[in-house]
Length: 140
Ligand code: HEC
Image 1 (cartoon, rainbow, N blue to C red):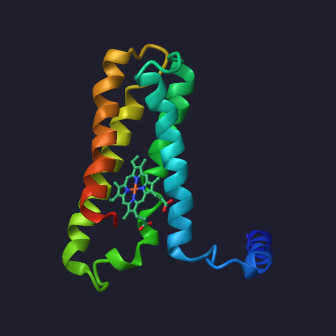
Image 2 (tube, helix red, strand yellow; image 1 turned 60 degrees about the horizontal axis):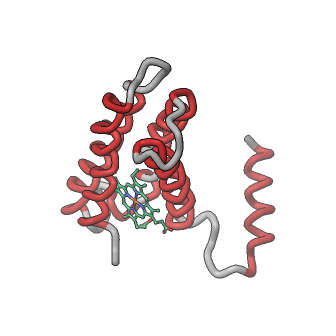
Image 3 (spheres, rainbow, N blue to C red; image 1 turned 120 degrees about the vertical axis):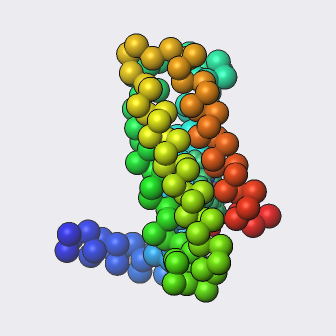
C-alpha cells in the first residue's frame, strides 16, 4: 500500500505541469467512465453483431462492467447526501443503484449457455441506465 501511494505521488509530480490534477475527483471519474464506455462498447459490438458473440469474452466483459458500475460514485462529493446538492443526491444515487442492478442482472445471465436472446434485453437495460443518468446529470 505504501508503495502504491509513493507511486501515485511520483505520477502526480511527473504530471505536475499538466492542468488537471490526476487525483481530483473529476479526473478519477473520467478514467472510470472511459473504461466503462470501452467495456460496454465491446459488449455492444457483440450484441449488435458487429463482432461475433464469444460467450466467455462477453461474460468477462459483463463482470468487469459490473465492477466498474459501483466505482465512480464515491468520487462525486457533490452528490453526497450531506453535500451542497443534497436535494438531487437522492435521485443521483438512485440512478447509480439502477446501473449497479442492471449490470448485476446482465452479468448473472452470461456464461457458456447464455444466448443473445438472454443477453439482449439485459444489455439494453444497462444502456438505458447510463442514458437515464446522463439525461439528468451529465452537463452538455
Ligand atoms: C448515476 C449517474 C451516471 C450513470 C448511471 C452513468 N454515468 Fe456516465 N457520467 C455521469 C456524469 C455526471 C458524467 C459527467 C462527468 C463527470 O461529472 O464526471 C458522466 C460522464 C461520462 C463519460 C464522459 C467521461 C469524460 O469526462 O470523459 C462517459 C464516457 C460515461 N459517462 C459513460 C458512461 C457509461 C458507459 C455508463 C453506463 C455503463 C454511464 N456513464 C453511467 C453520470 C453517470
